[in-house]
Length: 362
Image 1 (cartoon, rainbow, N blue to C red):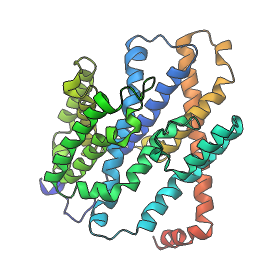
Image 2: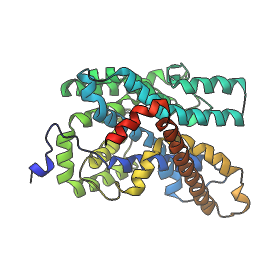
Image 3: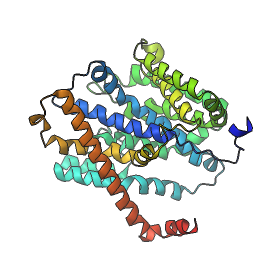
Image 4: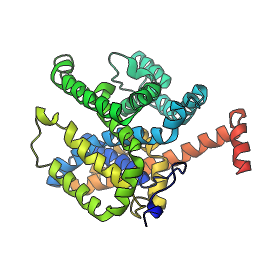
């Protein structure tokens, strides 16, 4: 029985359940943004007052997944010096820049100004998170992309920090101290008026490192999650529910430690046996374009907003639901079509020649 759940060290297990986490996180963040930006707010009690605004923190789950997934693909190769940096960073640009750049062009055409032109230019470099003030009005949700690309830039150093389990735990502890200093000292007076913390990689580092730690313990966590699947799911739900009632203070780094507990449990659960509700055609489809959905959902919201659905729908709850369905549906269609167009261009260009050869060999 143990052999069934203990893959040999050289076998890479595919953590397909993570597709469900990506898909649900992207949809949840879109729903949160739609409620926040609607002129007529829904009245759904605890759901609209507490739960939906909480979806904002799902970006930290994205960070954790990014840390784990990138380690799955590149940790061992980076550690052993078997990664071409040109290939590594080139792949990141090819995956992100075409779609993000197109959105920047659309945003710039819709509201052109010198300020927006400067911001759009910085956006397409993908290194705008290095700016002292990385808040961008052009594709405002793109701040997440700026932080993730900075993580890609620092990934060799990230591998160094996670060289062994002992060092990794020590670095995680240090990152929590840094996070506390960010909240209590560095991000107090200078950033009054908005929440800049998560835009800074030092503040968000514990979540990236937690994903890396899960990678270091992947075999043991996989076996444990397989054996304790249903029990672990119950714990995920219980701990997630406790988040809303347990007091948060400086001792818990306010929201950081509770969120770490919640999202780490969900990630471990996803590392176990495959679960039908997390790994199916719908989840796999949405996961494949989750980044695109995240990036374009506010653009689609602005389009839906101009239809003025409030003139036709009087009930605020129904208006919210219809707006979410229309906006997210349009985001999915737009993401799928544009993503496939970009893939087609790369596949049939000179840059796609090697990719075509690999596909034909398979």
